[in-house]
Length: 471
Figure 1 (cartoon, rainbow, N blue to C red):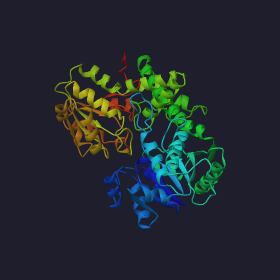
Figure 2 (figure 1 turned 135 degrees about the vertical axis):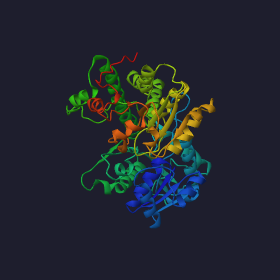
Figure 3 (figure 1 turned 30 degrees about the vertical axis):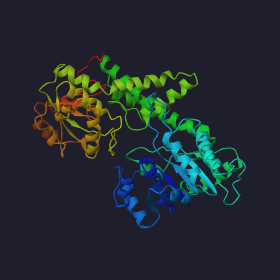
Figure 4 (figure 1 turned 180 degrees about the vertical axis):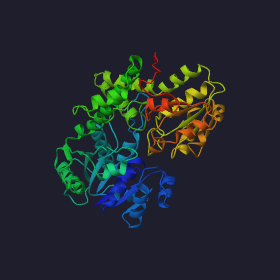
């Protein structure tokens, strides 16, 4: 099948490459010429395990190509996926300007029948807006899309479908190739029926073992994405609140996690206490759903609390450090392991490390940070965070080695749970630190083991003898 991905960012690039791997002819379009030039030269603008190898193989096989030519990309695809960003607007709502600009481009250049698929995370009702934008362009060209049937040869007609993505950064290729579910919303019309059959054929390779596809109406599909992310984020914030209380009452949140996670009605996923969630999805999608509720006079109080708890949780480690060293951190130097919001990605969007670094540096501390992948992206993001006081950037240095970052530091602060951090040589850690002190924002280590090693240890919600009030 001929497929076009419009938007070659995280979702578009993974989706297009994986479809090409299945034998489809794929064109990835982006207006950013530098990005397309990089892809055409063999580079990849994002870090995602396994993606670069897939791109190289499918480009060499002629199944995958990259372009900035909108007319060519629209002409190529029988199925056109919209995979552009939907950043939060000032009021928290999803900004659809990029999605609607793509819709207008499709209407401007399309011929014959096209299936337009919203892959971007968009509010309920966006498919209608996309259809209206396409129709307006067709009418400007002298076509009447409401009268043009899908079988009318080259007369432009279309169906707008919702097919939200459920990709985890750091495991996106695996998630796409082995999905646990495929959600597709189709309109109830003749064109919608044709789109449904085409989408069934497109996703057939994923359903050989058992059918993972859930067809539904378009608005339900749009809502499903927001509902899923909001549920997962709620579990994280709930566990973080329990962790903070566990410290005050002398309980260990890790033991609590095992106790409740063993209940099959609850399960273990997304029950880890830590320094809060970040990334491009959870914070943005929760804000957007809250805004949708406001627009329909339905206040989503639980999600408001989820956001509030998460914002506060990003500073829990900072609070522990201040209680240990005092409010002024002038002259203190900290090693920080992990910059990306999660392992196996270089994504720094809403990363807790940014809030932690900013709070420590503003109190006079210096920091040496290490991340296996995200350092260069982090430098750009922190430059933005300190735009009002760029001189503070001098307090932040970066190391190419997680051990070298420890040299002469007053404490080690762990923010991201990269695998390489889980079993370090603690004798080396102690030797390089000025004093054996560790603030663990991901509960990677056991308090008892740290005590036996002579390391003063502060986790999140751990009963480690440091039961401190967070108020």
